[in-house]
Length: 175
Length: 248
Image (tube, rainbow over all chains, first blue to last red):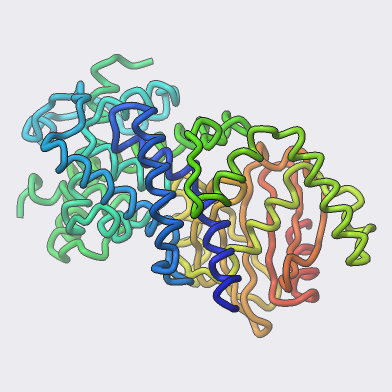
């Protein structure tokens, strides 16, 4: 395959990944408008530096890594975290020791929208890896690479994120 | 070893992501009733969440092209992306143009019979499947049950159908028309055959069976009452064999 064909391939792939990219950007930002700006900036950067993409590697991970780095740069520039604060201000210790008195299968009774609403209430550090795994199907190692986190931290955050999600749903009451 | 230390890994165990989980932890979770329950909670939470996300995404077809609302920029390197965005804003016009283009290509290539009734979205789906052909497996196993388990764990349960002269060797998640689907990878003497399982909601306008060449790759689709299949094979004989088996 010549270089031009390879570049055409990655551009097609980038275009196909735009919905995924906006969803990921949304999980990193405070509003839909910010997410669209971030996605746009990511696309610009990806196209500008498309030569740096290695054919045969994972385009989604490459794109998401660019996105996460851009957002991190923006946070650093503002010297602050995203303006929207999580509604789920539940301490980790509480999460880890609170017993669940119902069967796990109770999760099947919740409607999709209730689950998505609960997900939206999680802190970004928990919601992002949980969403990358459930929504994008990324393996843990890839999530670790995209978010620049140790593998163990990804494991812990996914565990805590789901635990918080369950807690929020149960607190809202069984359907 | 106590439960507080071990249960941090419950999510990874539930997901089969035990690569970096210490053996002592795995042993504890296997033997501890409370930790096993924790693993079940993690599995149920993931399946419910993955289903909720998939349901939301499917409900957005075809309006879920979020690129509609992207602000347009005029920098030259983005020209192609922006062109695509503008094109999507006029879906009807784009659809007509695509049909005309397909007919021209089909006529030039001498394939009018094959594309006589391509079905809504079928061509794009076949193109996406061909584009993803040959990418590495995210999960490697020759055990169909293990692959089914892995796919179910990702909220995309997929039946692993036995193909003649082929051995299942792994699976990965692919993107077809902007949606994630489970792709099962088979290996045989001819080469690699890939079968992507497409939810019924995505295959609504597809023909019952269709095959064509995308580039040099033989690609087929089989529409069934439940999940439908996109197949990419190493050669025409392999494609025919796989399609016949899957249709049955």
